[in-house]
Image (cartoon, rainbow, N blue to C red):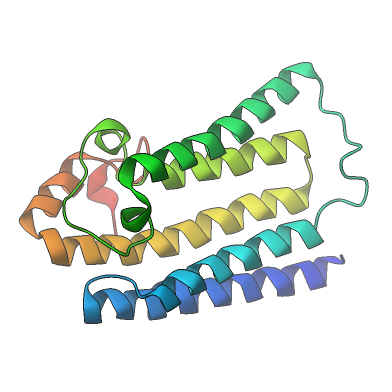
Length: 188
């Protein structure tokens, strides 16, 4: 894919993500206090658009690029570990809670004591692992898109959690970073 087509498709993915995460999902949270099945499916559509963008923009010589043994081990560790931890996080939190269909308590233990969004952190680490394994500027763009999509989703979820849990969530937000290594006071 040419750089112009790549850029247009990346902007289209961002547009879809903005509409889904910052308008539709946010509206569901405000109206009914949870996601509807339609919003959950639209979240998957936004993620599918991101995956399709990454697949359609993979390097033409993929997977013929060889990165060397150290980077290969690091890449596979991040890739498998990241996505494995996403699945473990979903199982630990519960399918309904992970998908915004039910919120009845605020998780603050385990990985949630280190990050308010550990599933997002490990998801992006998995994508970074993928980019290490098959390095290209296009895949760096895939990482950036993943981070932006995830951040849009997180903003809507955190607004909802603040509405639901009030002062308890404010205390949690004041002590635990949104992602990792960033001071909570910088949240916007």
